[in-house]
Structure formats: C-alpha cells, structure tokens
Image (cartoon, rainbow, N blue to C red; front, side):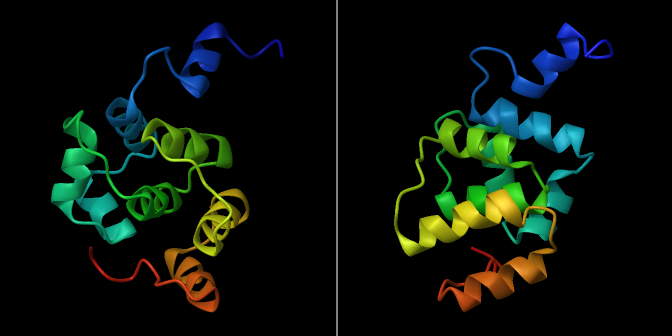
Length: 130
C-alpha cells in the first residue's frame, strides 16, 4: 500500500464524470494501441472506433463494446465499467451470460479462442467486420 499514490488510484478508477468516449481513449492509450490496430484486433471498422472515441452521442452495440474490451485485454473491472458507461447492463440471456464469462475469465485469451467459445455457445464470433 505504501507504493500506491492518489494519482495511481485516480488513473485506475478514472475521474468523476469520465464518459464512454474518454474512457475508450484512456484504455487505448494505456494499451498503446492505435485506431487502426484496434480495428484490426477487434474486427471493428476504423470508422466505428473513431466514433466511439469522438462522438459523444454515439452508442455502439454491446457486441462491439465486448469485442473492443476483449481485444484490448481489459480486466473485468474496466470492461464492465465500459459496458456500463455505454448504457448497457448484462442480463440473463445466453448471449449476455457468455459475454460476461468472456469478460471475467477469458479476457487474456486470443480473439481466435474467444471466437471459438462464442461459436460453441451458438453465438456468431467476432471474426467478421460489422
């Protein structure tokens, strides 16, 4: 605890009022990932990534947000925060329970592994552009 500073805590939990767009930018910066790289990793168009970062009115699909979280290998706390900031709540459907499992347990896995799990669950993988 002696090595943790207030600045570190603020960086981890974010500033009060941080919105979805600024949080996406923060995670991309922390992961040292460009728009083009994230587009490739998450199989999401560069236009979608740009809108997520810059358009305060844009609400991407839950599927897109989950793909971005997994592509960035965000930890469960950060992933669920991003989902919530976008205005979503994971429910008790098969799709949402599968997303929840992936965000909590498989976030360090490759997107290929994640696509396999999605397909085993009867859900289309992230392997095709939106």
